[in-house]
Length: 358
Image 1 (cartoon, rainbow, N blue to C red):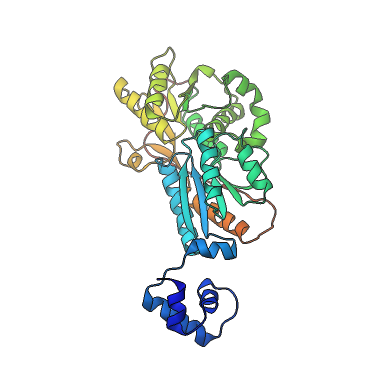
Image 2: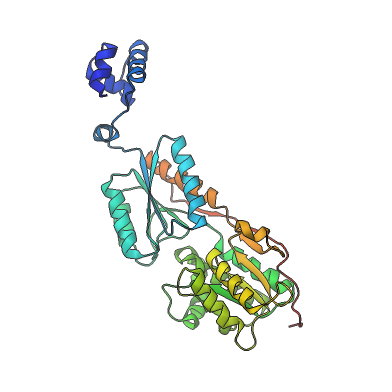
């Protein structure tokens, strides 16, 4: 069913029917009613591609998620979708798998699809020329979870550094001094010692680091504030975003000499791998090992004991990102926004004083 049939049924010109159904130009109330009633009776559905040729808008938002299978991105996408739908926008979702080449391909695809705005989680904050090019062309871009270095675009994230610091402070308050950390820490730093040397300078621009590095900064800051020397043997990087890699890193840490009395995991997959390792080693929580995790996953509250974990406002991240990009699409010219949302540490039964005072 085309607009020609709608116009014929309503007794108006095709141009008039187009103005009414497209929501632009003038038409009397009587004519609007006749056109809309005819469209409904005939089951007419507007051709968005044709409309976009007139308006220059496709009423779509493109999203590049880091890992579409992650519970984090699932909730973020729900927040984006709810806001977009409420404003009459559709959402096209792509996945980068945290690979720069795949991210560039995804961004190019979305631009070719002529989306009106882009929400992206930059997987390499230090190398995002494709995003800089989009912003230079006045294309609306909003970043989530982390920010590309020097990119003049809005961003929405959580307080990774502050949340991680608080976790370590809680463990210190319980009497622990040897606290291990399991984190991805894949790029861009090859050497932990050099990262440690740069940490004071990096804190002021932490949002341009990947989340696992931000959380390591919080770990280091808590040690500094408490006057506890950092032992780099307790910092273990999985080198990949997988539970299997996290398990290997945790086994190496807990089977080594002078193992930690407490453990902090930097995200949900790191937590899965670490708990698998703890189970294999037969260690009791919190009797032999205290544990606090980043990302409060559903199963953590059902374990006995329950696992203390940081809850991120992931749905709100998606909502805020969608609101930002829609505002830019609608022509908002306010200063760049950097939205940082607070987290919540849900304390359960996985933290206790160390078996031997430290």
